[in-house]
Amino acid sequence: MYEHKAEVVIIGGGPAGLAAAVSACDNGADSVLVLERDREAGGILQQCIHNGFGLHHFKQELTGPGYAGRYLQQVKERPNINVMLNTMVLSVAEDKTILAVNPQYGVMRIAAKAVIFTMGCRERTRGAIRIPGTRPAGVFTAGAAQRMVNMEGYLPGKKLVILGSGDIGLIMARRMMLEGAEVQAALEIMPYCNGLTRNVVQCLEDYGIPLHLSHTIVAIHGKDRVSGVTCARVDEKMQPIAGTEFDLECDCLLLSVGLIPENELSRELGLTMDPLTAGPVVDQLRQTSLPGFFAAGNVVHVHDLVDFVSEEGEIAGKYAARYAAGLLPNGGPVAMVKATDGIRTAVPQVIRLDADDTAALRLYMRASKPERQVTLVISSGDQTLLERKLPVAKPGEMIVAEIPADKRGAIKDSITVVLKH
Amino acid sequence: MEEKRRISCIVCPISCVGEVTIVEGKATGVAGFTCPRGQAYAMEEVTAPKRTLTSTVWIDGGELPLLPVVSQHPLPKDRIMECARCLATVRVTAPIQEGEVICADILGLKVDIVASRNMETIH
Image (cartoon, rainbow over all chains, first blue to last red; front, side, top):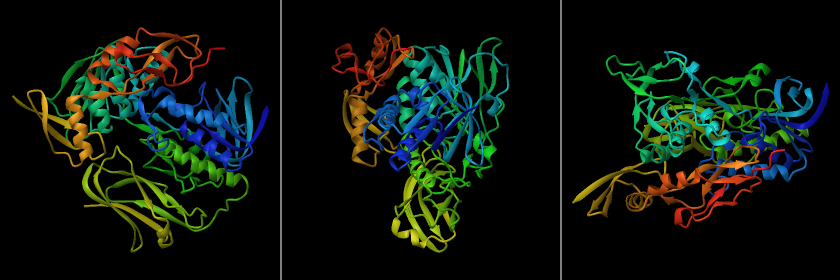
């Protein structure tokens, strides 16, 4: 068996993995190996040809491939980083031995000093949301359709219906219109849109595509190919209301119904998982429950902005390099972060109180439901660490807040995050 | 003739929905936005809305059959579809570097369409 070793091994060469690689290298790792299963690195960015990326990180508006290109260039400029393409990781063991396979080496064993999980996320499918009806061709996830249209040169359909109001679905609605297809409607089961307002305006309203909120699809029709769908309004328990059904003719149904962090490897390894984010529990250094294993980006929690994915990758890369160099002791005191009233998820879930990072502590949170005029309160014991008024809070738009560096001393064994009216 | 057009602001996450008053084709007033940036956005949306266009063109000899492209500046919204149809007829040959002009001065609108990634020749 081919044997390989590297100080820091990164699983997944998307935006989190590339940022982690650059950062690990810049923080002293002599050998960094990125394992990527696709034919090129860059991850999902390569198919996201629309603009709007990089406003935070590069202070300019880039397309997905443009954003990926900047990181690929940085990787290229660092000879200590090796990117292995067409490589699938089969398993990761607690002693940091990785079993992977690719056409060049066959099955190989890789010994690492530190491992970073940056596998990203994948789309929920028809099976995940259990739509009844027949099983014809023409039902795709929005991201699969995006890859066909933007990279492979196929049009998945000419008359479409989109289920779900996630950003990928909205962006695909516009993309299909630009390619000459017709988009009949987008349907969202929740009473609010999950995508950014910008995408509702520029991808639906610009093209006169209706968005039906509190609606879902109750049947898919067609034998060989989709011929149409039956839609219905739902009640507050999200159950279809009898008598509200209507049919839409289509030859293609795109699903944009959520993303799930891809954590088969993390689960097999036995990392502690957060059931709400569906990702591993991490501390502010992005170290997981097993020392020497780090995680960053959509594998930890699904982000809205790639800029924040890169930022997490940088943190994970830095501390993985330090762990590999024997400079990151473990086992010190920690505080747990608890998301409660109004906040569904908060990352990182653990704060290491002995860490030598002196910067502000940045928390990423998601609201449980849309709210207006609320106050975000982050506290520890009877001490308020941060209080910020939010004119709006939406589940679809991540809340980012920092506990100032001078408040870090006030953190006790737990931190509570709430939205107050 | 006075007309009121509803505009959803995209400037920040507050997403104000306001109204622009149009009298005889001219925007005369704006209401319902909480900040000046929102007001300016709404006025532009009514008078001269612009959009950045991203699409793909066919590429011969490349690692992929399609090359993603982007308009270097926003284009008038009502010409976007026409520009997309124009790009559907463009065919280029690999290799291409990011930023290379793929379609200069599209439809005479004084905006270039450029490649948004490198595309190497297929081995």
